[in-house]
Amino acid sequence: MYPLTFNYGQIAVKETKAAQKIAKTMDTNTKIIDLSTLKDIFNQTSALINQDIPITSKFTASILVPFRNAIFLSIAVAYASTFSADKIFYGAHGSDAIFYPDCRREFYKAFEKAAQLGTNQNIAIYAPYINKKKADLIKAGIELNVPLELTWSCYHNGEKHCGQCEACINRKRAFYEARITDPTEYKK
Amino acid sequence: MYPLTFNYGQIAVKETKAAQKIAKTMDTNTKIIDLSTLKDIFNQTSALINQDIPITSKFTASILVPFRNAIFLSIAVAYASTFSADKIFYGAHGSDAIFYPDCRREFYKAFEKAAQLGTNQNIAIYAPYINKKKADLIKAGIELNVPLELTWSCYHNGEKHCGQCEACINRKRAFYEARITDPTEYKK
Image (tube, rainbow over all chains, first blue to last red; front, side, top):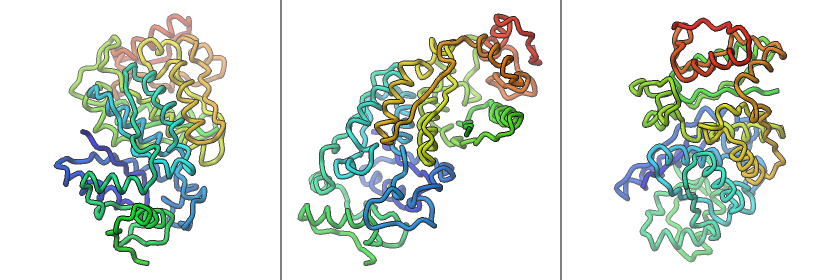
């Protein structure tokens, strides 16, 4: 298992540290790919990168980072290719598919085809949670003993989850729907 | 026109400076995207990045940087998407298609589909030289007044083109085939 996490200039860079902490509980490490220079591109439109664009509590185009996951997947394919790994696991889930086009099954299946043609290798992309909701992810996490208290969702980079941005609202709702006690400390 | 050039940790980083010089002759600038941290991934297998892997005069797997152009294209799509540009021009050419899977028409057409699905935008990828040989590129360059003497092909980063690596050999041959006097100063 070769976990990958990306720094793409996001304000909430804490999520990369959270990923590393979680990897360590599984006796592994995540490689953190530093793409922070992409800030220069995404700064133009995205509130997740540009401090001057307000972060909203509902989905708006301003929290979309266009084609971001495709950049991540292309690097994952390149990385896999360097040591002939042939399976890539992609964390997109169904609750995001409505809003984020690069979280849809149609997208990653098309990307998988491009990956095979572009490497001449039989690389498969799996997205095991593509048809599951965020609440299902939490249930799966409990079953798999994932330390959910170490995960980070907030778009801000504060001491605690803000509790008010779109990601925090979705996180709260998912714990509620899953009927699992939310271990997160929210600011509000 | 929004030219893009990539620093991906290649030894021949001079090529990014060459691209900038050429852009300036056209009264524009190329954005140089700094992906030099990818060196850590490509270092494993590629002679274009790792100084300890010998650079050969013929194509071998060691001069392939797997899925590199897909990473470049994914960033181009993200960039285009931030200001609703809908045409991307990709510099792959036919002489490379035999050796580099990500220079083939099948690849970039599959990638174009993934780009459309992953952005929900009607982005088109054009590769005007995909069916042309390197010699044809030189002829087109002459017609378009491209300052060919400013272009850089060599995989090394020397004062002059080495004249012996695969890229220099291909460059020499292409000028010969095009019956155009080669303005390049080669070391050998």
